[in-house]
Image 1 (tube, rainbow, N blue to C red):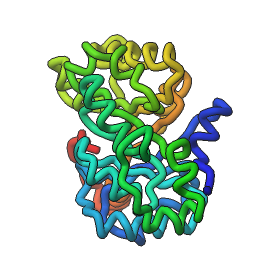
Image 2: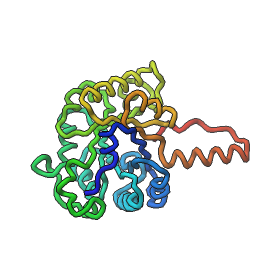
Image 3: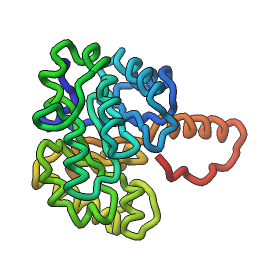
Image 4: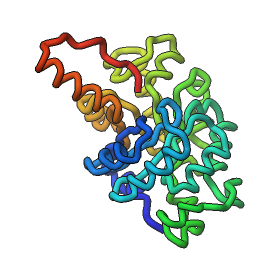
Length: 263
């Protein structure tokens, strides 16, 4: 089976730079995949991407060495299994709040007897290789998103879930969970930053893969220094809108609008 490059990077202690895809286009995915990202995540939660879009985007990413991941829109086994069968090499699962939800997520990614993933990797066999089923349980990356008030109370239970590879922090929902305004790149000393560091410390204690979403490259570099293994920077639609705004401002002298606080 084709090795999961970012799992290998994690084992070597190398930081992983992840891109984010929200536009339902195989061409934009191909363009992003050729920019040097270690991995690209297809956002099926807040992006405007459905399964047929995602399949074509996975095919486009596969023309490069970039590792394809997906964030599903919910902890739903059928959706998780289907995108894995399409050749996705890792799942980011949102709103995992307790041990049971973490176990349900992990089990949907694993074949029996470890889990209950149904067999039928129709495109996984093409992308991963004919021995896909023999090694998929170990190669597929399983990241639970920590972003709810309940999850903060259950960090130990979530992080000791068998076969969970790691966690991914969504700073916007995490901010809402502790009564703060949603946003990214939270400054040191803020309540959200303190919670992020608490989650990171717990994950490191359990030797888990740790990831976080960031708005800027500068902040992502700070998160790597803090100990994160996996950092996401912006998203395809943010890069497109930012580039367009910069050009228009130079030509028209227009004022920048308010910064987009979304993904």
